[in-house]
Length: 376
Image 1 (cartoon, one colour):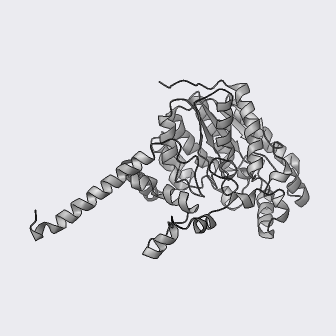
Image 2 (tube, helix red, strand yellow):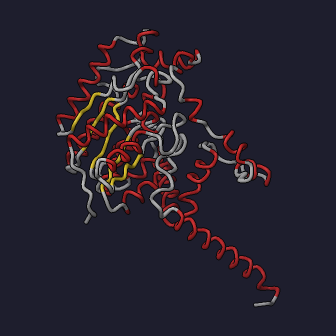
Image 3 (spheres, one colour):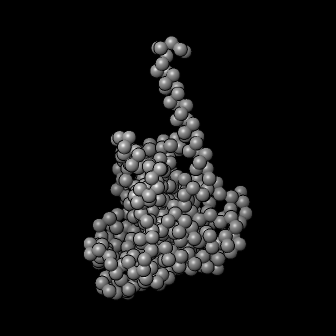
């Protein structure tokens, strides 16, 4: 083997050994249940890890499905969003082995929630919490779409009516084959499965890191310069001030006005259809589910006259009807958060997350007795 003609094979074998060791190291590192507690940035890179945690956990699991408000993106840290705080509160209340799984991601629509719920049900959670966000009933811009993160459709790969859903989501066959191919690689190669989550965690951005030069690599992963690294991350401290919505930039105010002007209470939007599908899917699997209406900044809505609150009441009534029709709970959290703790019409700071967590923890304990024993 010392013959020069085998040099290429030696180099290739050495590279494969390094990759295998690196892969094993990642698998070992992420075998822990406490590495990350949500999707870190605007993407959904943590989902494979979170589903693995749900599958391995030997106690009570509560899955949370929603969008940026639930995720707490930008406004709070990895252990400050209300799904995590609910887990803490339940453990303090005596449910020692409760693990909350925050599957929410910025921009998620009900189509995303349906795909994630279908996968979630395979892991047999004790309870599923579904966020009902009023903006998802708007037909403005991206809100008119059934799904935001198309790669979430991987989780409905064995759904009986998959093709019908893909047509609803406007995803072609070639695009879906690519989604299936990439996720097949993730299932066997730990580095490919976790790579985006690692970069998201360290950069707090879902933008692809620039690996075109050694300098760009150092800029992204400069472990020695802590201050520089923290400066590149979104700092929740800057978003924890009170009444941030009062100094909201004009372009964001105008965007909220456009979203609210396009609210659909006639149930003609695709999101109404999928919300019913979510409720029906839960009933088919006899899954305990809570639908809750996400907090709303009524002071902001009144100040800018975004819409008549009766329109919001109509949306809540129909959403509650859907949840109750299929045997689920519906909770109205419209006024749970004080106006001071909003950053716009709907997003809340850390204090707002603590308010939601306190209320939701009590509601869960009133309605359920989560298991504190090992699953079969």
